[in-house]
Length: 361
Image (cartoon, rainbow, N blue to C red; front, side, top):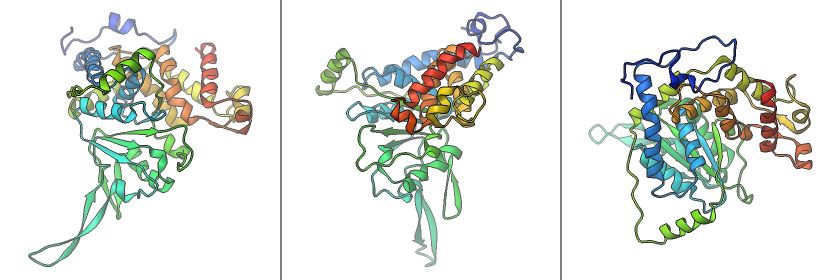
């Protein structure tokens, strides 16, 4: 292992094996000093976190990787899956492995915005008899917030999360309160129930960096689930990362260099999803109402950087863009009635766009 003060040379194998640029790209500044140390230790830290989560959750490695990518990139995640797939347990286990303050909000039709953000109460000074307003923070004042079944509450209450997710603060009674960093919202959603649910507005969906889909376990994994959960003991998850360490790793992800050609590819991919853009292919113009906005482009590049860092690589490549494109983009593509009539989904459209990327690089 390198020391913390050893830079990566221009032809260092750690940098060259992840080279994603093309001929003609200007040179990018390599990581050096403590960043090299952090990058090399991150791959080990990832394995330790995954091992702790595996004490309570069987399988779902792709989903766990996605959650770690979002957290390292400073983003939020939406977990979509049918009941009984351990969505809540997965978020709980992740929060415990990160040694962060955790809170759970069970979204229901009668939930009010103040139940999330907090409210002002009248407090009387016993010595003077004077009454003053005092703000009492709600469950949003935590590092990891589980918004359980987020689509079971009306849009007015869902909107209480918008300012917190985008700006890391909430405003109550005209006064703004900062949230403690790091701050993440991990929301769950059941895709099959329609009764008593409220679709998330596009503005709220856009705040989620990744939409992660949890699928049924394999037969072997389901046997393991049945064996563990019917026993009288479940291993406890031990904390691996502190909040301060996580903030440092988030800074590392921001400093991971991305070649200009990779950024151009991300921009081209997102712009091609917009039906009114000259770069949009015919199938996008036929099936899409609204495409991916600039925030999606930012999240695509950041997620690719975080994925590379999780693997201990000093630069993201084309495969990273391919790997994160679906969870970053599919919930941002709004299809039209023609797409529904033709049996096309946002996921299908993103996959078709990815098939075209080899012609763009």
